[in-house]
Length: 149
Image 1 (cartoon, helix red, strand yellow):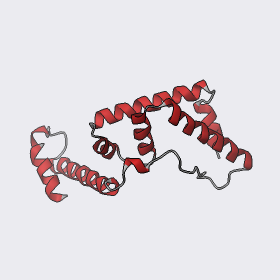
Image 2 (tube, one colour):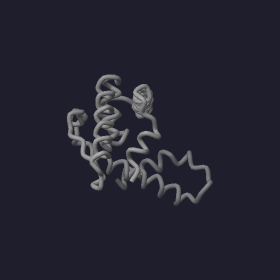
Image 3 (cartoon, one colour):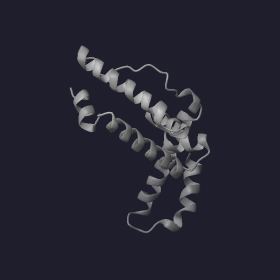
Image 4 (tube, helix red, strand yellow):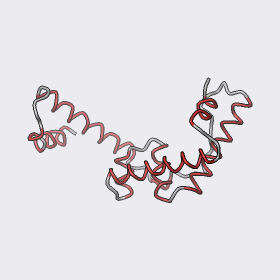
């Protein structure tokens, strides 16, 4: 990582415009390079095919009442149905990977797309999902109400 960082610093030296100390700029660049490499290592062995819709939904809050659990479960089932039926295959893949914590750089690498193209697909998927939920009467206020403590 140190060698990769040094190469990036040397290659991008001309972009340094003096708004901070050079060492601060170089340290920031090295840190970002290192974190990107660590994310790649964490996710490099996980295939996009392993991130499927057919996983179980578990509530993260253990203090759910029966009614809260039922509402959350119903919302999760609606979301999964909409993801399956309203999104394209590419949108589904990118959205599920992102929701499972996979970095966009890794999603882009595994799908053979640029990071910007991957972001655009994710953005379109979120918009389509939001529109579909609103058509079913589910708004941000509804979700907030279901998930408030």
